[in-house]
Image (cartoon, rainbow, N blue to C red; front, side):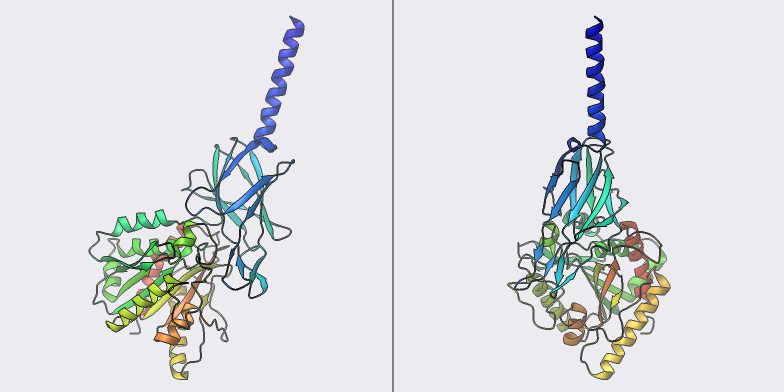
Length: 408
């Protein structure tokens, strides 16, 4: 009896100890990493004997170039509830114009979510070479991990369904991606509005900030506040909400499926075979101009590690360039006055030939600018970048656009 009880007690203690070890840091805590859903990162993973989870992201490459990009991650962990896991992730040895580049290792946080909807930041630290490391704790048996709060095709579909019946909304198909996903233009406002603003987002798949800004902008324009009607009396907005849908769906970082950067080559007609997404926007733009609806302002939303307005200086007639630069100074002033924007703009000698900002200015005379949103820190709010902060920016941006046209 005594020996039996002793054996049972020892066995129970060992079992509890094994479970405790598994639920903390042990190799048995992790079951699987799932990427079988929209916008998830292509990756492979392994776990060391000491329990470190090594996640190896896969680059996407630029066509006929050494350039490669790796800055997006989104995946779902399956593990024991209560487990503490340390994730080591990379590689982030991105190449841009033959030099190491990219948004890493500037990232200060990753975001995690138990349900894929409510996200919270966790701190990261650099790990060599060209990797990041951070720890997560499982509250349940599933945890989503992301670079930034994700915005996928399903989110866009929900937005379109929500606004489609609004009397001031028109959603028009304008073309197709490489994989035949339909591209749309969302017009908000009256056809006879005095001014038109063109907005594009998501040329680079890893950069969701612009989509959240668009959500906030539309929420403000559709609100019952008296200011919303006043704004729409002054301007209408045409929005291409997700230029690189294929890249978003497949969890890519920068290029389209044929290796083209959709924020390059705008100094020449678009290649409809390699970049049908740009060809669709170019055709829409030419049709709008022919109909007398040339945009008065164009903004291309991106994410980077700095958050500035990229104001380019192509070789234009000096008077035309001076007028454009004065417009951009005015834009920066109204953004500082009416939004949380503080990061400023690029230096007076900045040029980015081939970018959509410079290309639309040089080819069509449109006051166009690439608007980066800082993916690491929002100085104006003293906080990490969250979807709610970018939606707030969109809410404020509606007022900024109104005042941008004050001088007209």
